[in-house]
Length: 288
Image (cartoon, rainbow, N blue to C red; front, side, top):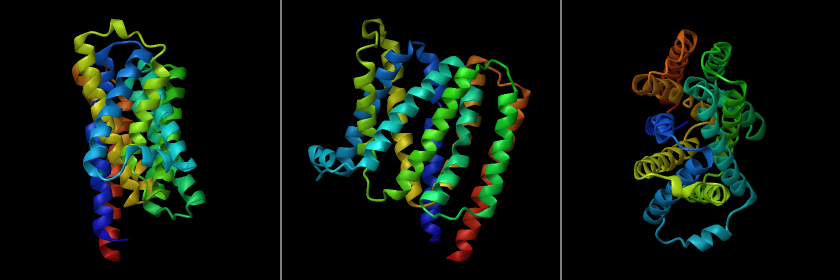
């Protein structure tokens, strides 16, 4: 594996997680019903990525890109929309810590899918990392503080969906992920528009919604680009980092303490991810 490619993947995934970390906090700050929030989220994801798409692909017609979409790419569009709905629903029905850490099941599913669908070998230390993350998640679910089973289920759907998306992105090296994400945002707008309470949106909520959607568009594009440079399982192992950063932000600003068990499990997870990334980069240098 080329060291520059692997480092590029690590940087893309890491930056994506940092950008998306305030997501949960902003959802709580907006304080609006699910469908109205999804409308704002989808709208500004679509607008932000429309601008990015025009900047990076000025010679490509949007209509032509739409016509060239294949079944795999449409699957990613739909799954991204489903994951977005499930994630927001989970944040609104269970604790932020539970939502974010359960989304960390993505590495488990991603590694299995990558192995069987891509015949992509998963390094032993990555499997060990996945096992540690899985054990940590068991402790998080065991910690019942401020949680609901329905919210935890929504979080699990999000983690599984993102595992599939990352594997599909790994198989779609030539796919314009900006355009895919933009269509996903538009799909969210179309679904939520008939149910959203648009007259109830305040100026403050609209501003927060625009920031929420823009950060999501940028972050998720970075995360879906990362599998082009490193195995999908390794990208997915970065996802639990959001659980730590996001939970700490909510704890700091909203005093939503994640609980002793969840906090310790989160620290174990982030340490594991950092060590896994270090050894993968070291291995890449040796190969190079």
